[in-house]
Length: 351
Image (cartoon, rainbow, N blue to C red; front, side):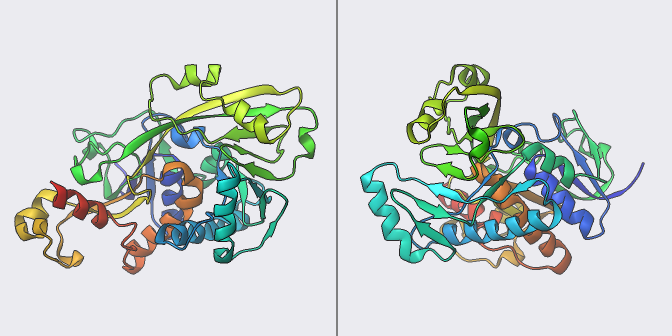
């Protein structure tokens, strides 16, 4: 049996990006997917690439740093798949417009303030399925195989990266996340070929590309039957789009559904996988707030995680993958707001 340097579990945008950066660093990589490449949340994503307008915060800085990196990465490596267009950001109402205006002094990229909206050039969108396959080109992929604790040793690999929301292999409770359902549409309408910008209010509408316009951005907590929700447009996605952009003779060409996984503080989880029980056993006082250097934590041998990307996976994934591979190759520490350390400490101090 062939020995791989890395086994990557999951072939969504997190797994595909991680595998790509590992391959570029010279490693032999095997990707194993429970379903098919780019199924689930990545398949259902609108893959809108847009910045955050807000007061200064770690989350805003992280998101916009990741966006800048990923736009450059896509432009350099997959220019045919990236659609660089401006974003027209509309407020929900007058109150929200005043809030957006108050954020103007914090904008550090090119923009224009128009009548009723902000025009931001730091944006675009990308084709989820084509991109994921492009990232995995030249990498061995096994589909329709669910990796479990029992069959993990089926694969010969020096290291493992979990890039899938299913954490049952190691059963670490501090990795608790939440699932959010979503659906989107590909549509056409009269004059849609003239739409050359993205629009966002309480949903997102893409520019025209390859004979269609994408409408997305649902946030569904009650995940019961996404297929039925999409067929019936239970959450009025099409009407929300029509409310701020005229679309005469609208025709739905196709719909997509998926479940996104996200952390409770919105930051993804990227880095070495901590062994909760072993770490607490060695440092029981850590539960009371005593500080222990992260270098002294007990980690699962050669196991890493890259998950919980939420609704902005195509913004975050390349940036996170670069950070993760830099940690593996150059021993560079992952930033604290992304590391599993933050979720570990929050969990054990509440337990």
